[in-house]
Image (tube, rainbow, N blue to C red; front, side, top):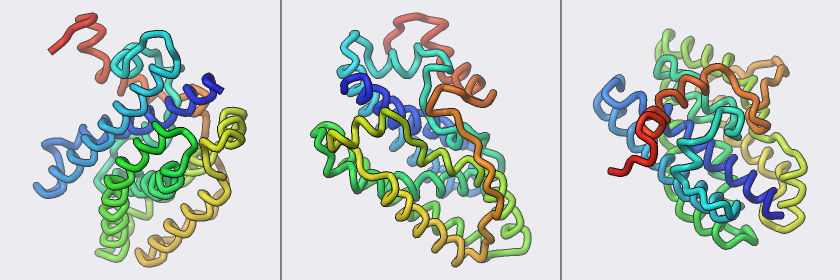
Length: 250
């Protein structure tokens, strides 16, 4: 049970950590000042969630590793984040579509984890849900605005959707970790979660006048530690200070 719980907490924490770092790359580079600040705030929310989940993961593991140890001192194969969140930022449309597909999953997930039999996960989910509701509102409004906007904005956001769609299926990846935790009442049923995700996604895409890609090809591996080359570049930057100056403190 503890091993499965540790693994799942890494998934939650790593998703937030890696996507938070990706969004931080927009700081000072946003298309407009308001969005520069908004994306930075989203990043800070996600890093805060990562801190909570990885802190709990370290306690469950029982080997004395802190949230900082787990964030900065693991190799790429030890990360359990979705491939979706490590995808490059691309243009603003790519970033927004990546965020939307992720937010549409995180909101219903946290709504269910609030009722988890694990009290710590439930508490983290309750706090994170408030932030995630705003994240989804922000990303979905931008998808609609870009999709139902100019010819160029429509074309770009459609291209982003076409490219990222193959990474969405991994959101619902399940293995023995999920089976163990569902039996213990820690996790919700993934099929009902998928139904909620699809309802959110298809509704927004319709309003945005975007076409759902018709290819069924899936790209996955992140949950098992099999990542794209992009994660290596993220970690090289993310972990530089801690590896260059071991055990440094501010």
